[in-house]
Length: 168
Image (cartoon, rainbow, N blue to C red):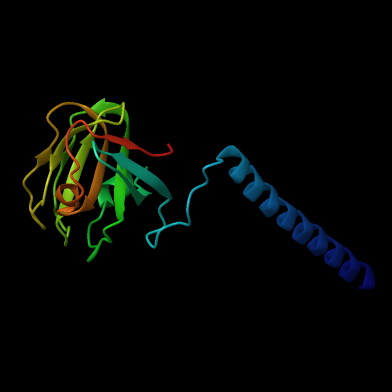
């Protein structure tokens, strides 16, 4: 009986020690791999990153959630009741494509910004209509879509040709 307890105790100690060192290694590896490390996860559990929009007169800093998976992109900002002025969500695509979004189940109005692969703004659909099923489309194939609070693009003088950068 004593041998079994001692063996079980040693096994548990070994597992505990391995678990702690594994956590430390993963955290260190992530920080080393991404010197511009991500921010804490959003309330929705999405990765957050800093994003800059450079206009002719200023550079504006935001923090955006990254909708990376198909499921995250399908969910988007649906059911959210607020979006802070310095927040947003970005939808990166593996390949350039004609983007089409709708506002089904989206409670708040948004500015939807379509981005080319080089980060320049192709077009902006401003002040989209909550709950609308009407498609909101890019004018050409794009690499990324950025959603921010409605009216912010106009407030910050953001327009086609301005440049958006973010760590990918």
